[in-house]
Length: 88
Figure 1 (cartoon, rainbow, N blue to C red):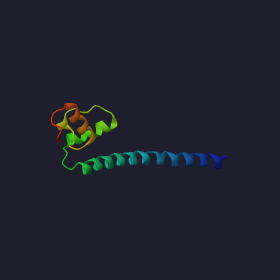
Figure 2: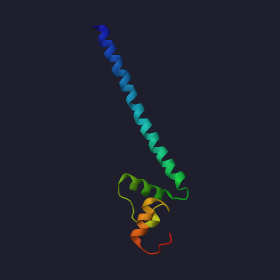
Figure 3: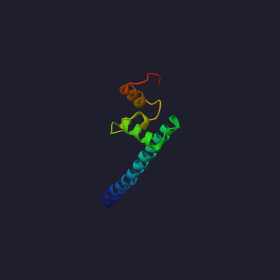
Figure 4: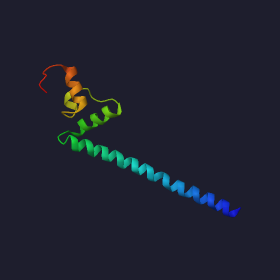
């Protein structure tokens, strides 16, 4: 009986330690996504990158073409909504 209890406790301990490791991987993935946007749009300001990430997640973002990275999908959509010059 003591062997079974010790086995269950050690298995629980291993699973408890493994849990936080997954959270760290999630944070690293978020950083990699940020770097991917920064590499794809090197001239974008932090404000523009923030709006682009919000657009991708389906959250609120500024609907103003200057607040989006030039050449991104939401930028093209906003330029189309604004009308104006068709020569992007």
